Length: 290
Ligand SMILES: [Zn+2]
Image (cartoon, rainbow, N blue to C red):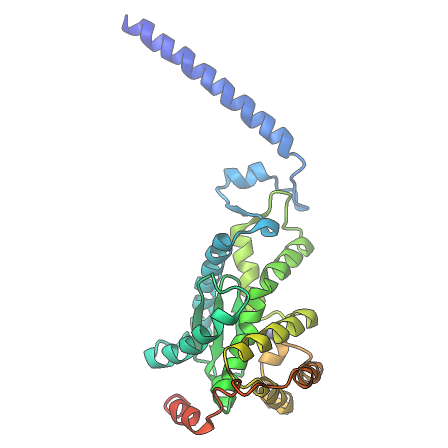
Protein backbone atom coordinates (compact mmCIF):
# COMPACT_ATOMS: atom_id res chain seq x y z
CA UNK A 1 0.00 0.00 0.00
CA UNK A 2 2.69 2.38 1.11
CA UNK A 3 4.79 1.44 -1.87
CA UNK A 4 1.90 2.13 -4.17
CA UNK A 5 1.45 5.58 -2.71
CA UNK A 6 5.10 6.49 -2.91
CA UNK A 7 5.13 5.32 -6.52
CA UNK A 8 2.13 7.51 -7.20
CA UNK A 9 3.83 10.51 -5.64
CA UNK A 10 7.01 9.85 -7.57
CA UNK A 11 5.01 9.72 -10.81
CA UNK A 12 3.44 13.04 -9.86
CA UNK A 13 6.78 14.50 -8.93
CA UNK A 14 8.29 13.32 -12.18
CA UNK A 15 5.52 14.99 -14.18
CA UNK A 16 6.04 18.19 -12.27
CA UNK A 17 9.79 17.97 -12.84
CA UNK A 18 9.38 17.41 -16.58
CA UNK A 19 6.95 20.32 -16.67
CA UNK A 20 9.47 22.58 -14.95
CA UNK A 21 12.27 21.45 -17.23
CA UNK A 22 10.24 22.25 -20.32
CA UNK A 23 9.42 25.70 -18.93
CA UNK A 24 13.11 26.33 -18.22
CA UNK A 25 14.03 25.16 -21.72
CA UNK A 26 11.39 27.37 -23.31
CA UNK A 27 12.54 30.28 -21.18
CA UNK A 28 16.16 29.71 -22.19
CA UNK A 29 15.19 29.66 -25.84
CA UNK A 30 13.07 32.76 -25.50
CA UNK A 31 15.76 34.55 -23.52
CA UNK A 32 18.41 33.44 -25.96
CA UNK A 33 18.12 36.90 -27.49
CA UNK A 34 18.62 38.59 -24.11
CA UNK A 35 22.40 38.44 -24.19
CA UNK A 36 24.74 41.17 -23.08
CA UNK A 37 27.66 41.92 -25.36
CA UNK A 38 29.80 39.97 -22.92
CA UNK A 39 27.64 36.97 -23.65
CA UNK A 40 25.98 36.67 -20.26
CA UNK A 41 22.44 35.44 -20.67
CA UNK A 42 19.64 36.37 -18.33
CA UNK A 43 19.33 32.71 -17.36
CA UNK A 44 22.93 32.76 -16.20
CA UNK A 45 22.31 35.92 -14.21
CA UNK A 46 19.23 34.37 -12.58
CA UNK A 47 21.15 31.19 -11.76
CA UNK A 48 23.88 33.29 -10.17
CA UNK A 49 21.21 34.89 -8.01
CA UNK A 50 21.68 38.31 -9.59
CA UNK A 51 18.92 40.88 -9.32
CA UNK A 52 18.05 42.70 -12.50
CA UNK A 53 16.84 46.26 -12.77
CA UNK A 54 15.16 47.76 -15.83
CA UNK A 55 16.32 51.39 -15.99
CA UNK A 56 13.85 52.52 -18.69
CA UNK A 57 10.83 51.64 -16.58
CA UNK A 58 12.30 52.07 -13.08
CA UNK A 59 9.64 53.01 -10.49
CA UNK A 60 10.16 55.62 -7.77
CA UNK A 61 10.29 52.81 -5.20
CA UNK A 62 12.99 50.94 -7.14
CA UNK A 63 14.91 54.18 -7.68
CA UNK A 64 14.90 54.97 -3.94
CA UNK A 65 15.98 51.41 -3.15
CA UNK A 66 18.84 51.55 -5.70
CA UNK A 67 19.78 55.01 -4.38
CA UNK A 68 19.97 53.60 -0.82
CA UNK A 69 22.36 50.87 -1.96
CA UNK A 70 24.51 53.44 -3.81
CA UNK A 71 24.43 55.65 -0.69
CA UNK A 72 25.67 52.76 1.47
CA UNK A 73 28.68 52.29 -0.83
CA UNK A 74 29.34 56.04 -1.05
CA UNK A 75 29.35 56.18 2.78
CA UNK A 76 31.90 53.33 2.92
CA UNK A 77 34.13 54.90 0.25
CA UNK A 78 34.05 58.35 1.83
CA UNK A 79 35.06 56.90 5.21
CA UNK A 80 37.90 54.99 3.52
CA UNK A 81 39.13 58.21 1.93
CA UNK A 82 39.26 59.87 5.34
CA UNK A 83 36.37 62.22 4.49
CA UNK A 84 33.42 60.57 6.26
CA UNK A 85 29.80 61.63 6.51
CA UNK A 86 29.46 64.13 9.36
CA UNK A 87 27.50 62.89 12.38
CA UNK A 88 27.00 66.28 14.10
CA UNK A 89 23.20 66.55 14.69
CA UNK A 90 23.06 70.38 14.57
CA UNK A 91 24.89 70.52 11.24
CA UNK A 92 22.77 67.76 9.73
CA UNK A 93 19.62 69.47 10.98
CA UNK A 94 20.73 72.75 9.43
CA UNK A 95 21.19 71.27 5.94
CA UNK A 96 18.02 69.18 6.33
CA UNK A 97 15.91 72.23 7.09
CA UNK A 98 17.23 73.91 3.93
CA UNK A 99 16.38 70.78 1.93
CA UNK A 100 12.96 70.45 3.53
CA UNK A 101 12.16 74.06 2.67
CA UNK A 102 13.08 73.41 -0.99
CA UNK A 103 11.50 69.97 -1.59
CA UNK A 104 7.80 71.01 -1.62
CA UNK A 105 8.67 73.44 -4.44
CA UNK A 106 10.52 70.85 -6.53
CA UNK A 107 9.05 68.68 -9.29
CA UNK A 108 9.36 65.53 -7.15
CA UNK A 109 8.13 66.32 -3.64
CA UNK A 110 6.78 62.80 -3.13
CA UNK A 111 10.00 60.77 -2.80
CA UNK A 112 12.01 60.69 0.46
CA UNK A 113 15.15 62.85 0.51
CA UNK A 114 18.31 62.41 2.57
CA UNK A 115 20.65 65.39 3.07
CA UNK A 116 24.17 64.68 4.29
CA UNK A 117 27.31 66.66 5.02
CA UNK A 118 30.75 65.29 4.10
CA UNK A 119 33.77 66.14 6.29
CA UNK A 120 35.82 67.18 3.27
CA UNK A 121 37.52 70.59 2.90
CA UNK A 122 37.26 70.35 -0.92
CA UNK A 123 34.53 72.54 -2.41
CA UNK A 124 32.02 70.01 -3.71
CA UNK A 125 28.44 68.81 -3.65
CA UNK A 126 26.84 65.86 -5.39
CA UNK A 127 23.72 63.74 -5.53
CA UNK A 128 22.54 60.32 -6.48
CA UNK A 129 19.21 58.93 -7.56
CA UNK A 130 16.39 58.39 -5.12
CA UNK A 131 16.81 61.63 -3.16
CA UNK A 132 20.37 61.50 -1.79
CA UNK A 133 22.15 64.87 -1.59
CA UNK A 134 25.69 65.42 -0.23
CA UNK A 135 27.38 68.75 0.59
CA UNK A 136 31.04 69.05 1.58
CA UNK A 137 32.04 71.17 4.58
CA UNK A 138 34.46 72.99 2.24
CA UNK A 139 31.54 74.17 0.12
CA UNK A 140 29.60 75.26 3.20
CA UNK A 141 32.65 77.27 4.25
CA UNK A 142 32.88 79.02 0.86
CA UNK A 143 29.21 80.07 0.93
CA UNK A 144 28.56 83.53 2.38
CA UNK A 145 25.04 82.83 3.53
CA UNK A 146 22.25 80.27 3.67
CA UNK A 147 20.83 81.32 0.29
CA UNK A 148 24.12 80.48 -1.45
CA UNK A 149 24.22 77.07 0.23
CA UNK A 150 20.53 76.56 -0.61
CA UNK A 151 21.28 77.36 -4.28
CA UNK A 152 23.67 74.40 -4.39
CA UNK A 153 21.25 72.08 -2.55
CA UNK A 154 18.50 73.17 -4.95
CA UNK A 155 20.76 72.46 -7.97
CA UNK A 156 21.47 68.96 -6.62
CA UNK A 157 17.73 68.38 -6.09
CA UNK A 158 17.42 69.42 -9.75
CA UNK A 159 19.68 66.50 -10.75
CA UNK A 160 17.37 64.14 -8.83
CA UNK A 161 14.13 65.55 -10.23
CA UNK A 162 15.65 65.45 -13.73
CA UNK A 163 16.57 61.75 -13.20
CA UNK A 164 20.03 62.56 -14.57
CA UNK A 165 21.83 59.74 -12.72
CA UNK A 166 19.47 57.14 -14.20
CA UNK A 167 20.02 58.46 -17.71
CA UNK A 168 23.80 58.54 -17.22
CA UNK A 169 23.80 55.08 -15.66
CA UNK A 170 21.96 53.71 -18.67
CA UNK A 171 24.44 55.36 -21.07
CA UNK A 172 27.44 53.96 -19.20
CA UNK A 173 25.93 50.48 -18.94
CA UNK A 174 25.41 50.49 -22.71
CA UNK A 175 28.96 51.73 -23.38
CA UNK A 176 30.39 49.05 -21.11
CA UNK A 177 28.21 46.34 -22.67
CA UNK A 178 26.51 45.56 -19.37
CA UNK A 179 22.93 46.15 -20.42
CA UNK A 180 20.90 43.15 -21.58
CA UNK A 181 17.36 43.28 -22.96
CA UNK A 182 16.22 42.28 -19.48
CA UNK A 183 18.06 45.10 -17.79
CA UNK A 184 21.13 45.70 -15.65
CA UNK A 185 22.55 43.59 -12.82
CA UNK A 186 21.82 45.58 -9.62
CA UNK A 187 25.32 45.20 -8.20
CA UNK A 188 26.78 46.63 -11.43
CA UNK A 189 24.19 49.42 -11.27
CA UNK A 190 25.37 50.27 -7.74
CA UNK A 191 29.02 50.37 -8.86
CA UNK A 192 28.22 52.73 -11.74
CA UNK A 193 26.06 54.87 -9.43
CA UNK A 194 28.94 55.34 -6.97
CA UNK A 195 31.34 56.32 -9.80
CA UNK A 196 28.80 58.78 -11.21
CA UNK A 197 28.26 60.46 -7.85
CA UNK A 198 31.89 60.61 -6.72
CA UNK A 199 34.01 61.11 -9.80
CA UNK A 200 32.31 61.38 -13.18
CA UNK A 201 31.33 64.73 -14.69
CA UNK A 202 27.72 65.66 -15.32
CA UNK A 203 26.97 66.63 -18.91
CA UNK A 204 26.62 70.30 -19.82
CA UNK A 205 22.96 69.70 -20.66
CA UNK A 206 22.25 68.15 -17.26
CA UNK A 207 24.04 71.02 -15.53
CA UNK A 208 21.95 73.63 -17.30
CA UNK A 209 18.79 71.65 -16.57
CA UNK A 210 19.63 71.33 -12.85
CA UNK A 211 20.43 75.08 -12.73
CA UNK A 212 17.13 76.00 -14.33
CA UNK A 213 14.91 73.79 -12.19
CA UNK A 214 17.11 74.51 -9.13
CA UNK A 215 16.69 78.27 -9.62
CA UNK A 216 12.92 77.89 -9.89
CA UNK A 217 12.76 75.76 -6.72
CA UNK A 218 15.02 78.23 -4.87
CA UNK A 219 12.77 81.16 -5.78
CA UNK A 220 9.53 79.39 -4.93
CA UNK A 221 10.97 78.49 -1.52
CA UNK A 222 11.53 82.22 -0.94
CA UNK A 223 15.33 82.27 -1.09
CA UNK A 224 17.14 85.12 -2.86
CA UNK A 225 17.79 83.79 -6.40
CA UNK A 226 20.85 86.04 -6.97
CA UNK A 227 22.60 83.77 -4.48
CA UNK A 228 22.89 81.10 -7.18
CA UNK A 229 24.67 83.56 -9.47
CA UNK A 230 26.93 84.97 -6.76
CA UNK A 231 28.01 81.52 -5.55
CA UNK A 232 28.67 80.21 -9.04
CA UNK A 233 30.66 83.34 -9.90
CA UNK A 234 32.73 82.75 -6.76
CA UNK A 235 33.36 79.14 -7.86
CA UNK A 236 34.60 80.35 -11.24
CA UNK A 237 36.98 82.82 -9.59
CA UNK A 238 38.77 80.15 -7.54
CA UNK A 239 41.94 79.53 -9.50
CA UNK A 240 45.21 77.62 -9.51
CA UNK A 241 45.51 74.91 -6.88
CA UNK A 242 42.25 76.06 -5.35
CA UNK A 243 40.11 75.07 -8.35
CA UNK A 244 37.05 73.61 -6.62
CA UNK A 245 36.45 69.88 -6.98
CA UNK A 246 32.85 70.67 -7.87
CA UNK A 247 34.04 72.08 -11.21
CA UNK A 248 35.33 68.67 -12.28
CA UNK A 249 31.89 67.14 -11.84
CA UNK A 250 29.85 70.27 -12.63
CA UNK A 251 31.41 71.79 -15.77
CA UNK A 252 30.81 74.99 -17.79
CA UNK A 253 30.55 77.59 -15.01
CA UNK A 254 30.97 80.63 -17.29
CA UNK A 255 28.04 79.66 -19.52
CA UNK A 256 25.94 78.78 -16.54
CA UNK A 257 26.42 82.18 -14.88
CA UNK A 258 25.42 83.96 -18.10
CA UNK A 259 22.31 81.80 -18.56
CA UNK A 260 21.24 82.35 -14.93
CA UNK A 261 21.71 86.10 -15.30
CA UNK A 262 19.52 86.08 -18.42
CA UNK A 263 16.83 84.10 -16.57
CA UNK A 264 16.86 86.64 -13.73
CA UNK A 265 16.68 89.57 -16.16
CA UNK A 266 13.67 88.01 -17.88
CA UNK A 267 11.98 87.39 -14.55
CA UNK A 268 13.39 89.71 -11.88
CA UNK A 269 13.38 88.64 -8.22
CA UNK A 270 10.08 89.26 -6.41
CA UNK A 271 9.77 91.02 -3.03
CA UNK A 272 9.18 87.67 -1.26
CA UNK A 273 12.36 86.12 -2.75
CA UNK A 274 14.82 87.54 -0.24
CA UNK A 275 15.41 84.66 2.22
CA UNK A 276 18.75 83.40 3.47
CA UNK A 277 20.81 86.56 2.92
CA UNK A 278 21.88 87.20 6.50
CA UNK A 279 25.64 86.73 6.15
CA UNK A 280 26.33 87.37 9.83
CA UNK A 281 24.06 84.63 11.24
CA UNK A 282 25.43 82.13 8.69
CA UNK A 283 28.99 82.98 9.63
CA UNK A 284 28.17 82.62 13.32
CA UNK A 285 26.65 79.20 12.77
CA UNK A 286 29.47 77.95 10.56
CA UNK A 287 32.22 79.20 12.86
CA UNK A 288 31.82 76.06 14.97
CA UNK A 289 32.63 73.81 12.02
CA UNK A 290 35.40 75.46 10.01
ZN1 LIG B 1 25.34 69.65 -11.16
